[in-house]
Amino acid sequence: METSLPGRGLKKIDAHAHVGYFGSWCNVGLTAQDMLQAMRLHEIEKTLISYPDNAVTREAAAICPDRFAALAWINPHLGRAALDELACLVEKHHFAGLKLHPLFNAYTADDAVVFPLVEYAQSKDLPVFIHSGHAPFSLPWSIGQLAAAYPATRFVMIHMGHGHGVYIQAALDVAARHDNIWLENSGMPMHTKIFEAYKRVGAERLFWGSDAPFHHYAVEILRTQVSGLAPQELEDVFYNNIKKFMRW
Ligand SMILES: [Zn+2]
Image (cartoon, rainbow, N blue to C red):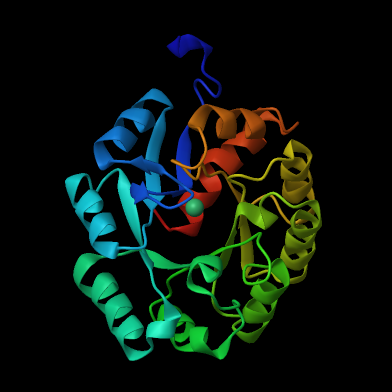
């Protein structure tokens, strides 16, 4: 069974996944232990994790700090409390970046409510990861506007447009226009766009991610593996690029 899994022998770092349970329509979840087991099975050295309740992320990262890096999922509508929470997670608990989910928390990425959080991230030279792919809040163009307003901040467009062809194309176009945007490919169905992003946006600007537990590791690994990229290029997407980006 294990020998038939895709991506055997490829080093991997997972640039986007979640510990914890997501209820409502989602009904998916992974404990930290489940994820560690899956990481061993799929040869994933390290995972960037986030969850709406940052205490869950913090607990998981504390279990295995070598294998998990934590991103602070912050709701910018909380104003001063949002900024305080981000500062606490970064300065006391060593969180490695800011995660914004405009769809979950109902704002566009270029809304002024986001600016103080981005300015804090920039002051600490931390990356900002932003969910993309759903109207009206999580569209690539809004992320482009934010990246244009903060050219010294490093942004990751999670899902690079996700499941919608028009948004996927926009993700590539927007990232090609702004060299402070990197793309993460979890949940994005078109293997062809993985190849295209690597060639057009840039060899260093694409990361592989699973978005576990929303998607199965094997499916996400296989899609990138069959994208048409050469073995050395696959190593960039699966491993080298995120490692360099996170300065690990
Ligand atoms: Zn996700």
